[in-house]
Image (cartoon, rainbow, N blue to C red; front, side, top):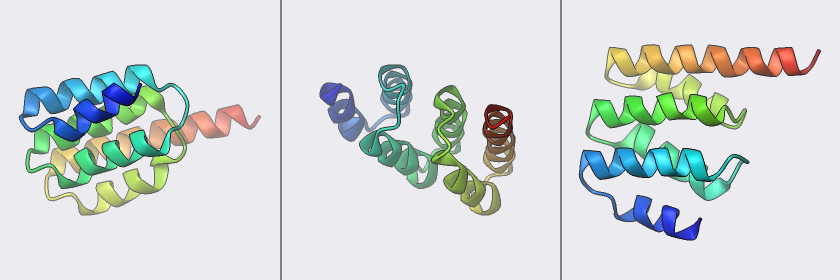
Length: 103
């Protein structure tokens, strides 16, 4: 798992960044702070709206409740409409899982 995080740190082009995101999502089913930080970095700091949107989409795969505040921020502040909309959808879905799980 550590090598997956190291690859994420070194990824510079969009394809390598996307591959890093998918590897992290597949490798870490349980919440992991370093993975969260990588997703946050890609979702908020990437110059590519596509990578930001991919990061948000892959948060859905893990559906960690820890993503909810970050998704709220992205849905309100990302400069790209498609990223904001995706963040709203993912937030709604993860929130619905939390409500269903508490019943």
